[in-house]
Image (cartoon, rainbow, N blue to C red; front, side, top):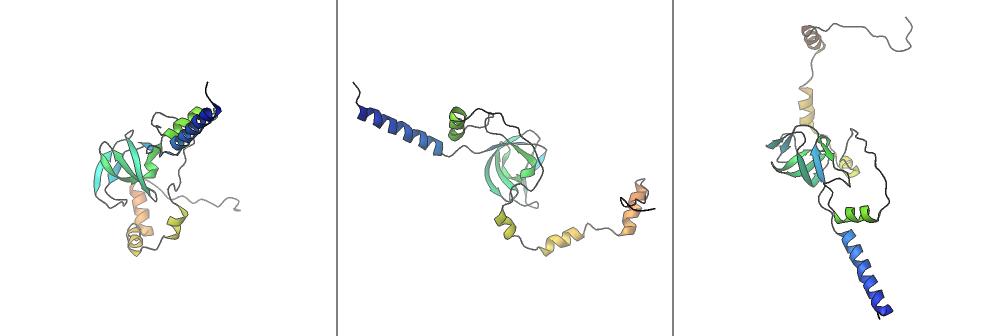
Amino acid sequence: MVSLMTIARLSMRFALSVVLLAAAPAAAQQVTLERDSPLYGEPRIDAAQVAQLKQGATGEVIGKQGAWLNLNTPAGSGWLFSFNVRFQSEGTEGSSGTGAALGRLFGPRRSAVVTSTIGVRGLEEEDLKQASFDAAQMKLLDGYTASKEAAADGARARGLAPEQVEYLGAKK
């Protein structure tokens, strides 16, 4: 006959193994590209391009810096904007973490509705606190300005004509 002490030890071992499995690091998060995107060697738009990834390609997130994701893909490893990917939700084929498996096994049954939004994904409060003015970037931005005359000429060349639009609620 099995003693109560043996049952208690077995229960403790089972409980400890469940806790350790749940605490084990989950596999890296899988993403799918929403659009064709360049993969850069560094998290900068002016960095050397490692590869050109096609829409539908998949990768594994191995790091994050601001709005940039460090991906490991079949085409190579590098950085791209997080706006260009869709994260696979927990419970899809790409989810293989032990914690996720335990959650599916012991967690409540529910369906999830995923809504895609555009925003500043990946920026943390600390990133915003450390932001600083970059005169070189402002100068680059200023290079894209056009005079009112040049803009009007460009619009006319493309068949556009000026149109006066009154403010809402303005009296005529």
